[in-house]
Image: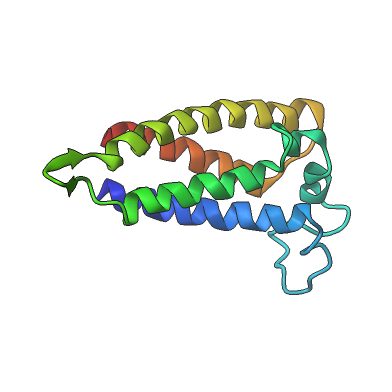
Length: 148
């Protein structure tokens, strides 16, 4: 059951990261099909946020790193078997990748607190999708601890 929650949250995080990546590269800005709740319109807080240095903490857009993270989580939960028997030896990619993902999850949570601080205290703005992404990352961290 926890694996299903991790999969669902990873899919939601992936959708959010894809959206921010498209917003970062200006592919959504003037799209009429974008609902008002999503804020990638000119002059909105999301467009303001993706244009700041905080959107590129490690030099590349944070959302691109998020896409990689969520895809790895989806692969780990959905497609990698717990144990593969190769030539009589037991190989445990689930556990090895799981530890790396747990470490990455710690980084997403710490970075999330920093980015929320930046949103509130430096940029003086609110971004519902940013908050949603950080909440997803926190929930994924807790779930990854539970399945470890």
